[in-house]
Image (cartoon, rainbow, N blue to C red; front, top):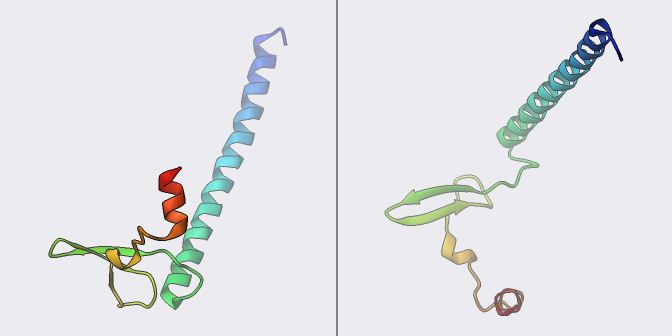
Length: 88
């Protein structure tokens, strides 16, 4: 590419492709977000723990909506798999 016009053509073609890619990514993220919020509203398909703090305790919601558990219920320092990781 020797001339400024050729570089401009390549630049504008690349920008068109990039803008379509960014737009497609934005639409995809928006649709995934909508799908996730619908699943959360229905209470299915999403297993993301919710966390809250109450009087210095860390509580998590991992099973049923409105059912909160102390995070210490899930800590298992004597679990053989955990011991192997810690011991290296």
